[in-house]
Length: 63
Image (cartoon, rainbow, N blue to C red; front, side):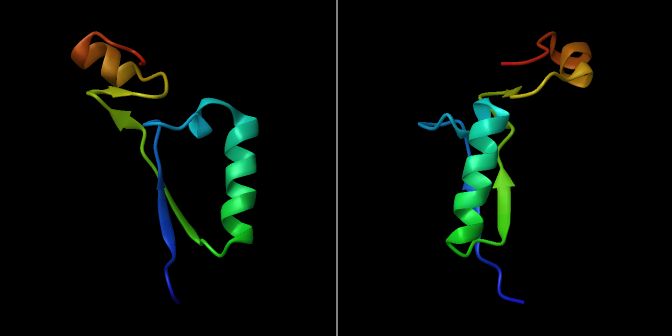
């Protein structure tokens, strides 16, 4: 199997900020031949989702 992957990040992109934009991006990537997506969910030392582990360990629940 050939792997054609892409990283999705919140750096200069708003794709990961809503379910709708994520769904649109997944559709676009599938249509253009990508079969692997690597979402970047940890940037600048914080997560892009609520995390009890982050809150307990670092005192920050979400970016």
